[in-house]
Structure formats: C-alpha cells, structure tokens
Length: 114
Length: 114
Image 1 (spheres, rainbow over the protein chains, first blue to last red):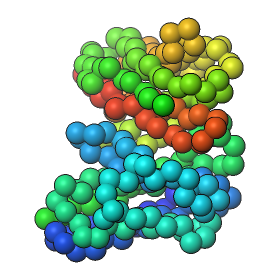
Image 2 (image 1 turned 90 degrees about the horizontal axis):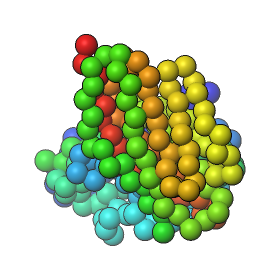
Image 3 (image 1 turned 30 degrees about the vertical axis):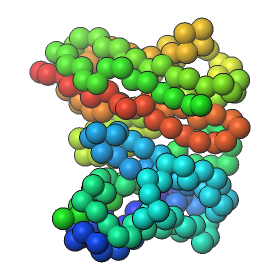
Image 4 (image 1 turned 90 degrees about the vertical axis):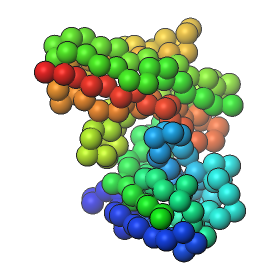
C-alpha cells in the first residue's frame, strides 16, 4: 500500500483565500485523523472520523475550519477564509478498525498564509 | 479528560550516552493504549511502539526500551548508546477505548551530538 497520501505537500496562499487540504487514507482503515503542528502548540488533534462519520471536532479552532469525509478513501480539510496564524503543517493519519492499532501518518501539508 | 505530558522540551546528549524521555498520561478509562512516535528532521511521523493498559511488561527493541508503570501513569522511553541518527522529536501518545481519540504530548526534541 502507498500509505496515507496528502496533497498538496506545500501550499502558499494569501490571507482571505480558501484553502483545501486533501487526504487519502490507507485502504481498509476505519479511522481518519487531522492534526495541525506548530512550534507553539505542538501536534493538535483537529477532528477525527470513524467510518466516514465525524466523531469529535472539538479541536477545530474556529468556524473557518471544516472537514469532510465523503467516502472511505477521501477526506478534505478546508479553511475559509485563511489567516496568517493558520500557517502550520497539517497531518492526516489513518488507523485500522480497533482502538489498539497505531495510526499511520501522511507526509503532511506545509501551509503558509501570507 | 485525556492528557499527555512530556515535560522535557529539549534534551541534548553526546553520542553513546543513554537518554530517557519521560511521558506521563492522564485518563479515566481503564482500557487505553500508549504509543511512541519519532519525527526526524525530514518531518514524517514514524510509529515506534504500542502498549496496552493491561500489559505492563517492559519492552526492548535493540537500543530502544520502554518502561510502562500504571502506578505512576508513566510510559518512559530509553535510548541506550545514543547515536546522531537518533536526533529527532519524539512524541508520546494516548488512545482510549471509549472514543478512539488519539492525542499527543508536546514532544521532546532530542539532539545527539557527535
């Protein structure tokens, strides 16, 4: 399997623009997680899904952030409108059914909002 | 509430020294899972080990060993005879059985100097 695939790897956008980050989890995995990593806040869990259903979005910082998982092989994280403080590395991860299993991470998307 | 604390922000050692990375967790669940991940300078997150709450056996894998103590809610990671290639950020993570939520500590940056 190719692992978790995220796109784009790098994104530079202007403040106020809409940004969409994409994730393809490992085939057969039931859980999908979105994390944000910054120097100040470390690795924060934004939202996670189980069987395409959002379970906990309490980590989503503001209404400007939204995430969807229309099917088992695709998820998006959207920021609209983007702000400079959203600059971070965004990771997607997936895991097999069973809470004891480890999560596998994508390479991350480095977002810069200028 | 779940929480993972890695009190050591940065550690610097000289090659061949032993080093222990601390991890303390909080959860009300009786069944949970603990993980360690490594993030080398290239940025990807690499899974190292998983531990179940009902298995307190310590584990050794080459130069790596893990000490899990439920009495102190700790899951510490020791690298024996450290090498420059061990330089990375190390994350401890907790996943509880009732939600599947996977949260991370702030990470410890380990620098191994030649």
